[in-house]
Every structure is written in C-alpha cells, then in structure tokens.
Image: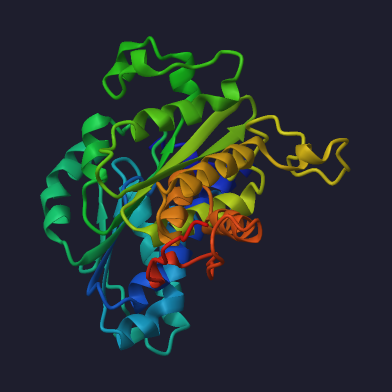
Length: 372
C-alpha cells in the first residue's frame, strides 16, 4: 500500500470502489449475524491502509468498524463471535492509532462501552505483514474453519493475485471475497516480466481498440480457471478513472452472496451491471432521451442473455426455475432477468405458468419447468 494514498482526498473512482466494499459489507453482514449456520464471522481487510483519507472519510477498514456499530446488540443477542483482522505492511502504525481513536470516540457515546463487542488485540487485530506470506500462513486455518463465515477484502495498489492465491481464495468454505485490480497497467505493461509472476499474460487477448474492456479480459482469465463441475459464482465490475481502467473481481460459493454483489453492480449500472461507464457503447446507457428504434432500448447483454436462457429452457437443459435463476447469476444478471423470461414464455404458452421470484432464491425449493 502506497504511503501517499490516504494523504489526499478520495476521488470519484475511489469512492465508487468504496461504495462496493462498504455496500457489500452492509448487505452481507446482517445475513451472517441472523443466519443459524455460523457461530463465528471473520472479516479480513488485507490492505487496510491508514483507515481514512485527509478529510477523515473512512476507507474500507474504518468503514467496516463503523458499520459494525449498528449491529452490536444483534451480535450480543445472537451470541456470535466476530473477528476483524486489519492488515497493512506499511501503514499499520497509523492504522493502529486511527483504530484506537475510533474505538475511544465510539465508546464515549455508547451505553454498553464496558461490554463492547470489539476488543483490540483480542477479536480486533491489527497486523503489519506482507500480504502473500500472511495469506499463505493463515490459509490452512481458513480452510479448517468450515462452520465460520468469512468476508475478505483485498485492495492493493499493485497486482497481488496470482493463480495460486486465486485458486486458494475460491476454495475456502463459506467465503466471499472482493479484490481490486489496476487493470490498465497490466494492459499497457503486460510484456514486463514482473506481471508474468502473477498472470500468464500470453493468455490475455486485449483488443487495443477497446481499452475499456481490459478489466473484463482480466476477469475472464481468472474465471476460466474455475472448475466447471463446482458451484461457484464469479463476477466483476470495471471502474474508469481519467483515461485508466480499474476493476473489482468477486467470488462466492453461495447464490445469496452473488445476488448481493450483483445488486450493487446493477444499482450503479442499470444497463449491463458491469461498469461505472458505458462499457459496451450502448445507445441506451443512462440516457433520458428517446431512441429512434425500440430495439435500441434493450442492451445487447440482455438481448444475448434472453436468447440464450430461452433456448436452454425450451430445450429442457434448464429444468427448474432455480436452475434458471442460477444461470442468470452465472451470466452476471439478476434473478429478475430470468423471471422475466419465465413469465414471458408462460404468456406465450410455451411453458406452464409458475410463480417466479426476483431475489433470495436460496429460500425456495426448485419448481420444475413444464414445457407444453
């Protein structure tokens, strides 16, 4: 982590990134608190920085602590054990001071200060370790904690995710992770030997006429390493900053995690759910103007998704509504996109009408799609 990072104000693209980190945490953490399957919840921020910018705006680490203050009573009443591990090799001393100040201010206004759910050096731990060696060190413990939920945030300035670390991240039970990537730099300097220590750059087919797709290319590279016979949901989001492109990659082994992440994606980009800019040069991107042709109102991504899922349903390859919803998540669409097609096919009398769902698909038993 660059020591200069938090000495200036967060810019718009950084705030978009933080919107994802903080938004996803606030979407997913209550699920772990109120869910019966997890006694322990581990939250890792491997590149925590100082915790705030020059103006005191919270980064991921202090944002996590601030969000936790809304759930203190729930943590106590549900008898959950929450562990927060904040790591930064360079800024850990400043981070430690900022965390102490945060806790002091929080306890000064809290009636339960003597029963605080966070105790520094007990379940709130600050580390100053190198990411790769630290991750490899704790990986066996993460694998063995099978009945614990884990949220992992990785926000470096350079590339830190290589094939080995990615494969390990995607095999940890009950784990969601979000990782930030400076994608433009890999596109520009992919011939540098240092990048080949992380990625087989010969496998990256960048289209030089479409630099805005560079993060999508990198994300597709990592997605290609996932075994096809294992249920896993992988997604990504591209962020533009000036002439450069950055991005997030996300992984989870549960449909609810995928829904939570994609909800944030589509809230920011209601055209493709993939970028904070017009990644596919769509005419309908965030426009309030009328379009000349009605077909231009539908993004190409949705057109392709509709065609593909309709073919799979009619051919019988997607046998249940839940399979259709899961297919939507795999294509980085929402369950409501699959529900729209199911309802459309029912109106056309292609399938029998079924009750459809737009979210929380893990709550429902699959319903067989009956073709006519």
